[in-house]
Length: 610
Image 1 (cartoon, rainbow, N blue to C red):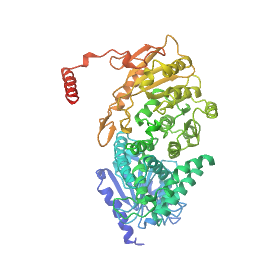
Image 2 (cartoon, rainbow, N blue to C red):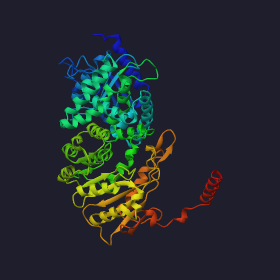
Image 3 (tube, one colour):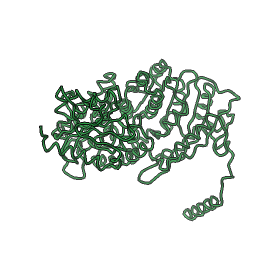
Image 4 (cartoon, rainbow, N blue to C red):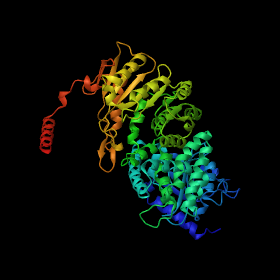
């Protein structure tokens, strides 16, 4: 039977997309059938009608990727993209392509592509990856992407991931401006993003939201879908109530989202959801286990002081991942963060532990359900932490809402016997706040004996030689071993617009610090990142991996290296930083260095003349 002309338009959009790809010469694009006898045999009984030969719109194979197939199904009607049960194979593009994938995945890894719509700028796109013998899993965003991006995503290519992360940061700035125009306050912007990402995991919402008749109905549906999704997880009702208090503003207290906007300067809620799905959801699906919400939170609060007064400073993702390498995290470790924030340390821990599982699904499930614990006191941060864990799998029900110093919470965590403690505590902003070292003591108290605690805190804590700071340092050494202190780059928190100079401390829990113990001090002031005015602080020259490996080699081997590290016996009243004990490596100084310092000194005097 001859196909309708309008469906041919959909096919042409897909065909032209691949024909214009720079790697088109490396692919074989077949239509309706294949010359490969293995593929023909697999599709022999894969008809969408229930019997007969299956005939996908396109079957694509790639040179050098013998075990990978791309199969494509098209529909002209954008409303015929996906059915509720994904079982109406002949009527819906997602349903049909997943049927073909089920047959082909008996012998291949299959990337399924469903495309609906006849206007190039208004099509609906869904990708699924079904590895040989496994179930299909949605991947990528809702737009057609290049062969290069497909392969990079499937391989979790590091270089491509960094490139895409740069694009994600650029989008975070764009989204921030859009939400500012819509008068969504800084502290609510990440909550909105997290809510949209949760709702998009609901198949019905993902399929139907674009067809809802008004922004008001869409906002109400978005909030109700968030609640529905949270109920599908192992969350108690009181936790859901706490979370929903933070999401209700979307429908009730954000009129700019619910009213129809006629100005071209405003994004409608539907357009925002589309953009978030394409830019953020696509990244999350492709490059898993990354604290995307934390990075958007940082961007959204750049020009807001609302949470800086609380001492909230989020840890950059390359440092949360560095923590997991410092402790050489294992698949059976139990991780605890008593100042969870957006969940960055737990997400990085999940990522590294699952990498080490090497495909053991039972082990992965146990990690997500029983090996990641956190405590968060601020309600909006709690929402982001739970959302983050939700988006990456299980573990979200193990984020406790409350004060980490609460005796009941301490008791609950101790029963889990965590072996690893990570934290970035609230930084003290006035005399009424708790000391940062108190949070380290709290974390260590909850760890099993010999557990490792890694904390990033202001350098001033390490330098304390009197008062409460000294008392807390004494208490730490009386109960625990100070293994290392790393001096961090001065501009580490530049993206958060915070000028705190920080250090990382590493402790061994419940082993009093031996009198003859030498502590490792690292002068780790250059991580290869630098700041660009509009893009923020980032690893533009791709130096971080090499630098990180150098840092780890020095620490693991307790190696002293001129200009980088020193080992030293210290007491509580000593300064806990490399700068106090290292010798300067004058051999690296050049005449140009001397001249640069003189120029800066002269310029300083000229600019500061009375």
